[in-house]
Length: 130
Image 1 (cartoon, rainbow, N blue to C red):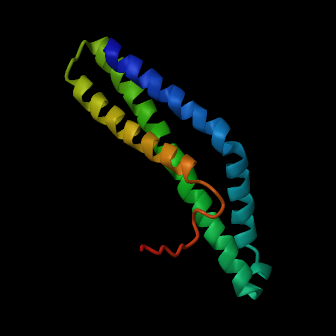
Image 2 (cartoon, helix red, strand yellow):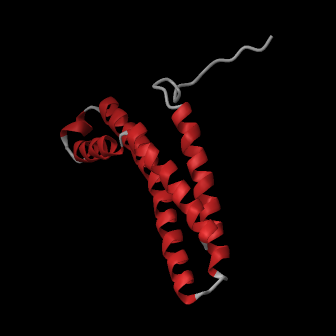
Image 3 (cartoon, rainbow, N blue to C red):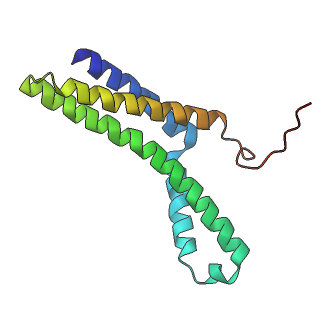
């Protein structure tokens, strides 16, 4: 249990680092504003503006959910480890390990997104190979 708790703690620290890098509070506020804006009838009078708002809303929503998934996984692993430790049930370790492995994969994906998170990274590119 000790090793898994240590690993869970390390992953939790990695996840906390994303809050500062990505300004999750600001992104949630932006999503709420986009949600409100997309509910407005006036937006739908301009299809180009509506498309732009919906595209950004989708991007922000996907990113927020990509941070929420590992957060939930870490919480689930913590609960499992606590219950397993109280009940002295070693079989819980396998399930907690699977969750922690999944969280680690999700955090690696977030780290790649951070490196490739520039404003032009979502744009198309033309590559010439000579």
